[in-house]
Length: 286
Image 1: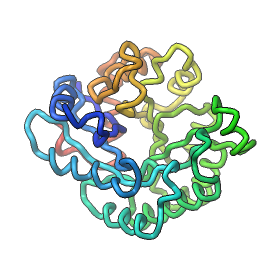
Image 2: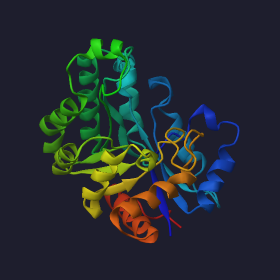
Image 3: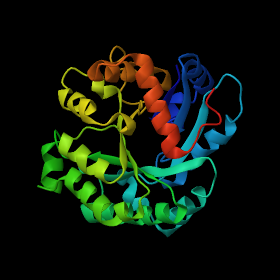
Image 4: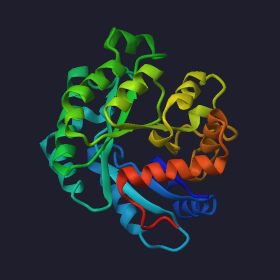
């Protein structure tokens, strides 16, 4: 039974002291493939995930690592021409299989203005189109944000804005993508599915108050669901509050199996097949 962690920040400084051990634990837990997300701490560092992918390629006892590259919406103000040129070059690497995570984030008061985020989102869609790569979507609305953030972003809805931009500017290219760490509604999921997207569930599906996520997990078609950690963030129950790691994808998969009335092996097989089919990667899963 193998699993794919479809979204982990392996280049995080929180792994600098024990990255080898962490990846060995992943392999031993059956998490044999990881998509390392290449946003770093801003555009100047978005190549680090791809470097890790090459560093661990072919090493016995370690998971197969692919990478993405992109500018997170929180860093959109740093997405100048040089950063976009760099992204376009990274996208040419065979181990870069997606552009992302990209999208919109209206949660933090200090985030760039909405129009800046939208412009950078659209520009990265153009780069992904040229590279014929899917996109990985980050969408965080103002729900639960501080009063200052709510005042800054007003009534704008990040989900509606994100999906509207995808429908208008991305769907026609038929390249699809992944809504990572999904926290939206069934209606949001339905709109994304209509655009050819997969829905990825993270450790927060295990949280007691996350019934809305579990409702969507029960709704999504089997051939469109993925599992992830978003490590080092969002550690699942029973490890909530700790530094997350790819080996703990098993807890997310276990909860997804429970929600859908399947056994864990079935969910592992389904989500692994979905990932490999969508990204056309199979050769190093063993």
